[in-house]
Amino acid sequence: MAKALPRGVREKNGSYEARAVVNGIRINLYGTDLNELMEEFERAKENARDTLDYRKTRITLNEWFEEWFSEVKQHRVKETSIAPMKNNFKRTFGFYIGSMKLKDIKPLDVQRALNAMEQNHVSHSAMREALGRLRECLDFALGNQLIKVNPCLIVEVPWTFKQSKEEIALTQEEQDNFLSEMEDSWYKEMFYFMCLTGVRVGELGGMKWSDIDFKNNLINIKRTSLYSKDRGIYQDTPKTEQSKRSISVPAKVMELLRVYKKEYNTKRLALGTAWTDTGFILVQENGKPMHPDTLTDYCSSFRTKYNNIIEKENKDRPKTNKLPLLPHINPHAFRHSQASMLILSGLDCATVSKRLGHANISTTTNIYTHILHEADKKASDKLENILLNQNKQKQVILN
Image (cartoon, rainbow, N blue to C red; front, side, top):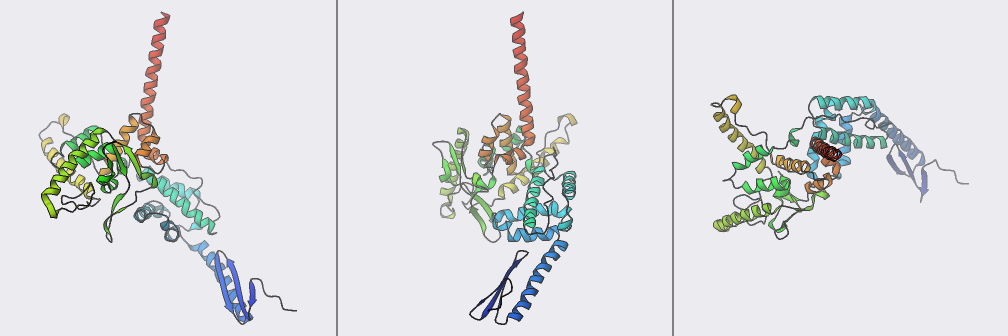
């Protein structure tokens, strides 16, 4: 009778195979000498057990995040999102609790880190993003038996009513001051276009004349313009699937585009062969695609020059009659201004979210909570006025 083989071992054609999975590590060994194979097999299983025990007791949050991100997360996101995601973690949980060992992190540690972020003026949206990514990262650690429970499950992001710089919208006066000084700029119509549509600057950079439906007053957003050192200026799909969209625009927007297209064609004909015909709307003055940061740099430079002039004029003005300075401006501010205007005008959040191309409506509500509060207050005041008028009418009837 043949001798029974050890568990996990089988014989085939005079050779032995030993197989096992220990702590998620797959072991496959082969040999012709059963005793030697079993010794090697036991050592491999012990090493697998030791590896997990070591990682359980020694690995830090920063170490695990790097491993999880490189092996899992970065293969599920766009290339352009990798650096912002890693930077968000480094300046949030990576900074506050990144050196802690995974096994030692408790819910209170995560909550204290969030509270410290609030004290240091980290935006509400950045904290929400960081917590969501940490929860995802630690779920994977849980699945790999590195921790027994995810400490993120019962913590909450503290609310701050301070706006981050990226969420600042221009007032109507600030927007008018900026645009009034743009009359001689090649970019004039493009800034007006962003004000009236709320498109991202990358989406504007990726837009072609073929994406404009002049007959039906529609613009179609199909791509975004990006830049990297390796590839230079290039086009890619928009930020999210919902970012691919068609939005209706006022007739004024189409008139702006017609004026710009006329200037565009005049420039193209004047330059002749020196003009590079790409079909893109946002181009340099020789027709070549524009770097995505050009309008951002222009905003910064324009603001500095404008404020220097105003500050000189203000020296001779009394304190009560100073001219307003332009605040920090970037192209995204026009997007926020457009969204704020739509919400305050009473447009429902779902429609605003769709026009902006947000991944879901919660993105819109998280970013514009302060505006939604203001819109809700206006609705409350309007309701109060309606009720007061109804009461007055009843009093008149009774009298």
